[in-house]
Image (tube, rainbow, N blue to C red):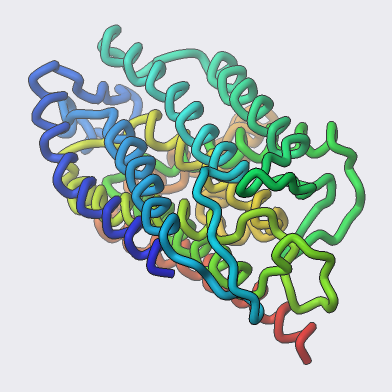
Length: 374
């Protein structure tokens, strides 16, 4: 747990310190966020606010992850009554999750850079964005289901992801490895775009993502404290997960970075995360779900992202079929803006919705453990 706390604190401190410096640098470089002309008119006042803040917290999360590993290197650990030395190197889980995080952030960075260069809110096309995310998800999805790696030069058989659907553990059916890679690609695209659509008001996506990472930090640490340790489970009270402490470490680092970034991103935002931030966050949230074997919990943990995405789908479908709009504007947060709600009110109430989703998901997770234990 000490390594997780260190990683979270390092990410928080670095993000708090570096974000205002990045905001000033991006402002000098005229890297301001172009505002949609067809969006709420109140957003026009935000024109010129620096964007690409996601570059900062991607960088600080990776540094915090490395810092956590420095703590792990020297500390032996006792799990299920057995004392062992921790692995000194990076794990397959770390390679997959950090790689996916950075790669999808790079896709978003290209989108942000084109928006700034063209001075228009349209960056790369939606199709190009999906292709970029899919390529990144495919590469790291293949690593997740095929690559095992080693721990201290000892080969192990577990992979980061298995071919099975999961809720709080694998429940089936067997989708095959190819099927799981395709599911990972779908999850990454869906969650990345869900966070991207939610990122429309100051602090909204940052706070909601922070809650999701806190949930995965708790799940990862609980799985670690009840870990099978790579052995065949003697009962159903241990979790057969590849690197549960690594999950808690990465989720803790990301949550800490979100805490630090929220200080500068809350209304009125001094910097926006941009697509470099939203796409990377969504990809990492999806990655944590398949690595922790909680795939079917993902829509509950990310309930706000699901609602936001659904509002866009409903709006588009209704307009194409009937010529009428269900909402004044989509995503749904803009509907409430046009209804007269203040930005801060919308953000806080949507955070409550995100928190309820996280609480329900954790309730399911621990209730399933208690059910088996009982």
